[in-house]
Image: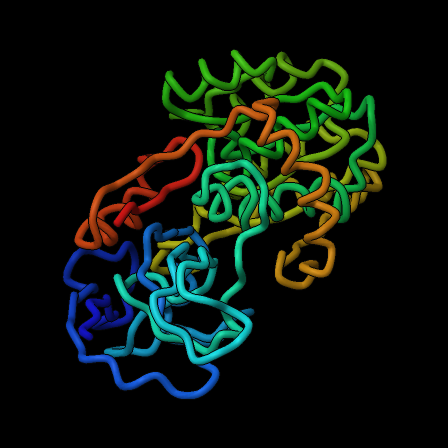
Length: 332
C-alpha cells in the first residue's frame, strides 16, 4: 500500500512558503507486531508547528528535513497487528500531514463513545480545547467574578477560553481582528476588541473601555502589542497564562519585549508560560467537564475546513494571516 506525505525541504527564515513543503509517496512496509495502519480522515495544523521548522529542539523535537512531518490526525484503523485496536476503530494519533499512517498501536487512541463529531477531538475536545482549559484553570486559577482578557479570541484555543471563562461567571473581553470574528465574539456575550492597526497605547485604551474594572486574568496567545496593552490594564494580583506568541513566530530577528514589564512588579502579578503536554494527566477532568457541553450544543465552536491532502500547506500558512475562525482542519 502506498502513502502520500509531506516533508519539509528546508528550515525557513521568516514566514514559510510553498517551496518549504514537498508532497512525496512511499510504499509502506509490512506491518510489524504491535503496529496499526490508519487511513486518515481529518488532519490538524497548528501554530506550534512553526517552532518545529527551525531545526532546533524547543519543547519538542524539530521536523527532520526530508522525513514525514507529524501532526494531530483522526483516522480509521484499516489493518492491525495489535489486540488493543481492531479494524474499523476511529482513533486519534500524531501521524498527520499524510493520507495513510503506519504507527505503533500505543501511539493511537480510540475515540471516546461520546455523541460529538469525530474531528472535535482535534479541536474543542483535543489539544486546543485542553490548552484553553489548562491555561484558565491550572495556570491562571480563574475564578467566578474575574475580569478575563483573551487574545486571538476567535481561534481554536481562544474561542474556548472565552466561553469557559464566561460560563464561570466572569466578565470576558476577547481580542480579534476581522469584523466577522468580532461579531461572533459579541454574539457569545464577549466584549470584542479590535487589535488591527492599533498601537499598544490605543489597544490598552480599548481594553479599558471594554473592561473598566481592569484585568484579573489574561490568556496570552499573541504577544507583541497585545501583551503590552494587557500589561497596562492589570489589576493587583493578576495572573497571565502564556500559551503562545504567534505574533513573533516568523520574525527573522529577535524583537524587543514589552516596554512596561515593570507592571508585573507594581501589580504584584504572575506571568507563567505552559506547555499543555505537561498537564495531559488532567485530560479526563477536562473531558468530563467540556464534552457534555459540546454534545448538548452549549459551546459554540467553529471550524475552518480545507479539502484534500494537497491543501495542508495552504491551511498551515493561513494560520499566520488570520485565515481561520476556530480550528483549522483538513478533511481527506
